Image 1: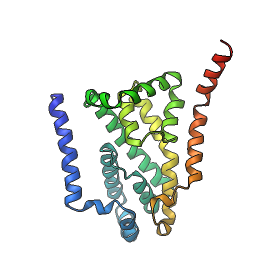
Image 2: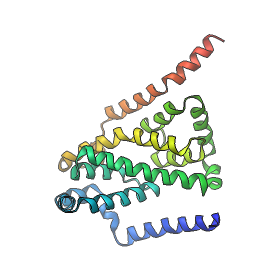
Image 3: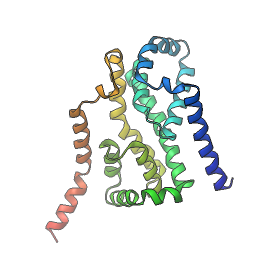
Image 4: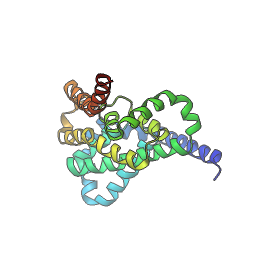
Length: 228
């Protein structure tokens, strides 16, 4: 298929999806209050037909992440409450990384020319980091959350990183955050906002852990300066 028509098809698909969500009021499903009010019904649905429930969860998660809709935290919370924090967390992480990979591929092969103009500076910065220490840098930008999740998917799609390395680093890098939300699902009724899940201290710990991953790169720079 001609790339021009493929771009139009993808844009049309995104537009139709968003129109359907808002015109049919499906957006009400993507909030904490709806989840709390209907948690018993959702648990009964999962217990009566777990395969179909997981299939629907997979479709929703993959499409939302691919279209850069910010619902992964709520889906992780719901999965933890309904399926269980361990199993639910792994499933949401897997489905999320599939959606992120679709976003990565779309950025790399379909909208590359348009996106490079907008994100060229970020792409150059990331390419430099990847050249110095591939895995440490990939984990850093995921765990430390320096850039928004959807921007990382796009920019890495424009970078030199391979799909395999993107998939692995995204899956592992997302696990800590996903599991925090999934385990918080056990106290769902006590939550008033998704912000209640993360304290300032937890965010600092993630950022410091991210910096720790960059330690080899920083030490290498210091060592070079000392022995020049």
